[in-house]
Image (tube, rainbow, N blue to C red; front, side, top):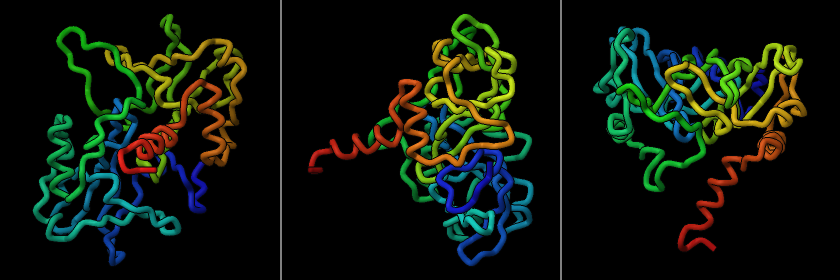
Length: 265
């Protein structure tokens, strides 16, 4: 599932706890969590701890994904942020995470010198949908990968299908490439895992569940993989999987949007 020979995708579980180094190779800390934007499937931000670095040991910090670059053979990410910027960064307590929204996140991105990913093009409608807010409870903009993993998966009739086993992250695009599901005994699929597009899922916030909007017959014929033998995924494989479930691969959508801009021929 790791397969770090210049990978295009890594699991959220693999990325979490990877060490973070600066451009000189000095150990700064580690990745504690990935926060997923429910609306477009992107990594909204990475949560980092810095150990004793600069006296920041008791704090966590939200960083844009683009500030990190993978060093494959060192199982590490390089943080491209100047020391002085980190020294003055506003962190948060490990036991008191901020109630984040896009306004807060926009300020965080701006502080580190990055443009928020939803600007200037607007938010891409390629992520999971969410049920309408009910009982005065607001739908969150972001959920952690750790929170999503293990959530149950149900069909539109509310029947329990299985659970989310993993989120696979596209390292280049900084988004959920696909979701790995297990279906328990559903349709005799208990020994297999299945890759499905992120946008095939709809969040049911108050049930701690996701609705899988895929017909039963489509699931019956889906090609799964063994729990101990994950496929070595690439974009060709992923495009085939997306097409099977009736979705356009997200990188096609992004490329079409760029090519359609004025001035592009």
